[in-house]
Length: 332
Image 1: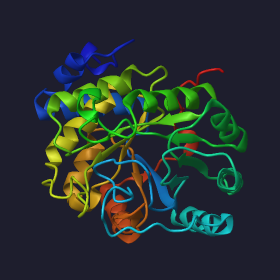
Image 2: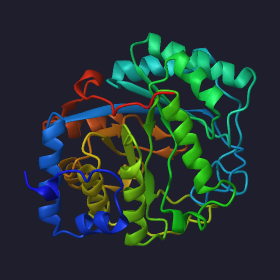
Image 3: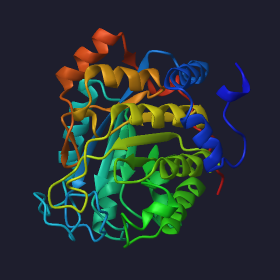
């Protein structure tokens, strides 16, 4: 394997990421597949299920999000689910073949009190079912991150969304540095970081490469990296954005795989707009995780039967939790 297929060491610059991203597509995908096979079973894809445990009414103004209270969308605030409701869904996800269960709450930040205590109980319950547990709850303090770790949380999702330069055009209610502070709190607690971004929001290729460089420069690198294609939602500032070109998505996934060879790269939102062939090309480029189930928080997702057929026809098998080693975790 030549130097261009190995992950850069230390800080990654946007220029280094761009040099990889702009390779001829077939060369890029081939190199990404070589890196992928050096660190993961070649035909294994992790199945995760994502559930919104508290929908709508978020204080943030993220321009892509249907749950923001700043936008008029089809989503209305709902009550927080009970522990038993969540565990029922977790059991169903396990029966359908999911190995990680992700819980999302439309909060700007976690607040102490009964709602957070309920989340901790959910985490303990999901782990007791033998599933990995992931949560995305907004900003965290060090104390809250430690409480989640003690409850058994496997991973915490907190996306950077885009580059620092473009970020202010998408979100104004939370800074880039606030997002990075939450990631550091998660790492200090010994929880694996799940962190990625969204393409198709009007950002440039330079922005995409800058995001990937930031992610690859995290120490340790994220355990998982969700790559989302924007799902335009009526009523949001980005509701009229055109669809993402699937080949642009493939380039971002392949670059992520080369820069972060040991991270699970998740083909996330936007799969409903991809053909079967485009999804297989994303897997060839190094994606090895999907969200499994007919809904992603408030947007659609391919149904389980369609994914089962795709797995069968492509010869894909489930990536078991023990089949990949998480990135090293920081000590407190």
